[in-house]
Image 1 (tube, one colour):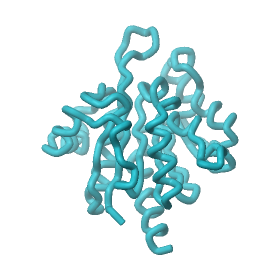
Image 2: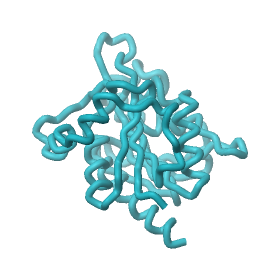
Image 3: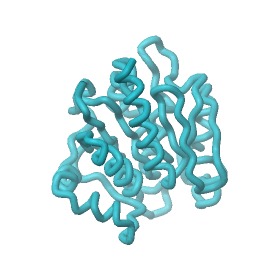
Length: 228
C-alpha cells in the first residue's frame, strides 16, 4: 500500500454575514502534517475549489505551524492546491478533514470530498476529521446508502464551544446536533480541551487541541489495518 495521507482543506472564506474572513485552521493541518510526516508518510494537500485556500487561526508563535508554512513542499502545494475533484483516492491510505469554520459551508455537500472519503474507507483506509472538519461527514454515505457516522462514536466542535465563540447563530447548522441527527454517538470534553474518538477506521477530534491526537490515532488505525 502507499504510505500517503490526503489533508482536505476548505475553500470557503466568508464567515457568514459577519464581514469577517475564515478558512482552514492552520494548526489543524500543520500538527497532523507533522505527525504523519514524522511517521514517514507523504502528505498531500487539496481543497474544495483548488488554488490558494484561505487560512484562519494562524498562531505565529507555534513552531509546528512555522515549520509547516516554511516547508517548501507545503508552500508549493498551498500556492496551488489541486481541487478535490482532481484527486485520485486510490493513492491514499487515509484522508484527514482539517477544520476551520469555512468547512461548515463547503464540506457537507461537496460530492468530490464525499467520494474520496467513501472510496478510502471502503478500500480499508482511514477517514479522519477534527473540529469543524467532521462537517464533511454529516452527509457522507457509503455505497449501501447508510451514513458513515451512523451508530459510530465521534467527536467534533461542540454546541457549547460554538456558543462560547459566539458563532452558534452564524454557522449554517450546529455540527454536534447534525452528527447526532445522522445517528452518530457524539461525545465531548470540556470546552477547548483535547478529545479524540476512534471507532475502528473512523477517527475524529473535538477542536484544535485535538488535531495532533487525531493524527496519532490515525496512525494506530492504519497500523492495525495493515496487519489485518
